[in-house]
Amino acid sequence: MQKLLKVLLVSVVVSLSVNIFADKKEDMEVVKQQIEKNLPNVNIDYINESPIEGVYEVLSSGQMLYVSKDGRFLISGKLFQIDDGIRDLTQATLDVIDMKVAPSRREKINAVEKSDMIIFKAADEKHRITVFTDVDCAYCRKLHKEMSRYNDLGITVEYMGFPRAGLGSASHKKLQTVWCADDPKLAMDRAKIDRKFGTASCDDPLSNHFKLVRAFGLSGTPAVILKSGRLMPGYADAKRMLSIIEEDEALLEKMESNSK
Image 1 (cartoon, rainbow, N blue to C red):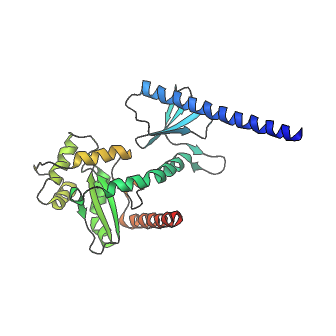
Image 2: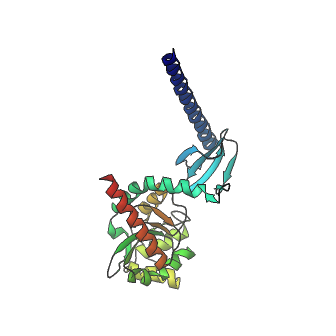
Image 3: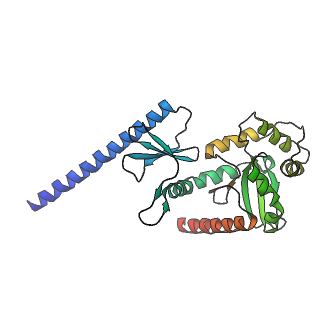
């Protein structure tokens, strides 16, 4: 009898778990359908339960959204837990997602021809980062003014183009004059530091760069891709960037060691 009760109890628990999981899947499908219906231009890259009951977290082009399970209400912004200190739950989720997609991102970056990038190489190269950049971005220009310091610390910078206003925009045409110049590095200096642009045009790789921008869900510049494939959005001065790079490379080494 006791054995029978245990079997029945396990059966009930399993049944409830399956039903709850099915309900969650149905709720997520409702959320997905409502977003696609009401916001057709929003791409859904990820959807899951949020820490708030009845609310789902939805990742779209690098931005986290929070949507009610009936799909009627949407909140854009960060979610914080405040009952035990202050914890940024949005960033915690983004970090987990970023770690999962990092290997794929790294693979795609490694497949890009170096000749399609504009590379500022350190004389004594110890580290290498890929930076998606736009010449009309103030923080991109600020990063570029740090280039000699980056290089002095052994950091090589590989530039790829990200015209934030889109392909065919004025920003795209400015980037095109840089990539198509006889001396692209000098043209990048003149564009970012002197705000002077040439008139060169060619069969440039910027449209291919922009495909990666969309694939990676990048929303701002500069967007730095580290050796592991992890994304570091925004500007950092040379010393801070070196610290970020070293932390990333230590993490990558640990991950590769654990996978053996």
